[in-house]
Amino acid sequence: MNRPELRVVFEPEVPAYDPELYRYQRVAEGIAGFEAVDEKELARFRQRGYLVVHQAYSMAGVEAARRELHRLGTSPRPVCESVYFEGAVRRQLPELEGKAVSPSSGPRFADLALGHTDKRLPALDPATRMRFVRKFMGFTREENPALKALAEDPSLMRVLSRLLGGQPRLYQDMALIKPPGGREKPWHQDRAYFNLTQASRIVGIWIALDEATPENGCMQVIEGGHRQGPRIHFMRRDWQICDSEIARLPRVAIPMKAGGCLLFDALLPHGTPANRTGRQRWAVQYHYVAPDSRETEDEDRLAVFGEEGKGVTC
Ligand SMILES: O=C(O)CCC(=O)C(=O)O
Figure (cartoon, rainbow, N blue to C red):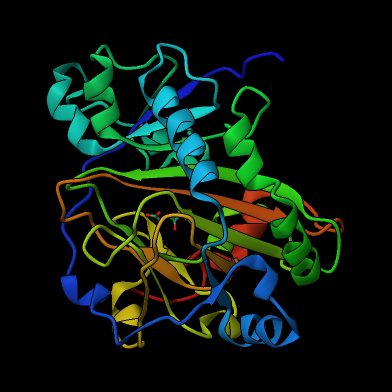
């Protein structure tokens, strides 16, 4: 298989946030194993916008996926489409000082909040690179069989077929390595990032490859928030929902052990706080679409999720 061209993104440093945004009211309940997903759980998913499945994956599968991610993080030529580094890596790389994508140079919309993009990995020893890596994308390929196996797990496919009402197609893959001190992912709806029509059915899965806790940046959600539809996103610390809107809503934390997962509606508002521990927090996230999903353009997405022309402020 041909290797994809590598895209390396050096993110800007993300400003501090109000810790109140991640003060949660409750911890989510879950079920054990994909086989426990019945009609009642599917109805709960529709109502709440998510479903937590503990012990969804075997530890052998999780460990094999971790080994592949470690290889992606330390290899001189990782087999994936993109690698994102935390803004803190800039302090190791003085040549990046002041380098950022400038809106006037016409970057793709998705790059605006991301910082400087390159085709080469930073000249750092592999261990240092691994310490600052935040995200990989486009790795679900034959060369990474354990990561591909997580994405194509037959029990997951059965659940997704029921949630999507048709054969699931993988739309996006991400590995999210939140390093010690690693940045917050501000509250957002994933649909605000996807150029897919609003009628397209989309379900995400976030799989813990480590224990995920409120301290190291586990997922938090606004239960039932998908039923209020699309929310306006603003370019602040990231492409995100306004903090003042989130501050008014009750938040649910989703801690889980390695091998557990969160299935969620692509309109469910969610976010993760910074990692305040001394260890990385590893997870993978996949999004799937129904067979009748349709691609659209940035401008269609921004007409729904963007602030322009709506007279709103944040
Ligand atoms: O793992 C995380 O920190 C959250 C990732 C996330 O929500 C996203 O990238 O859409």
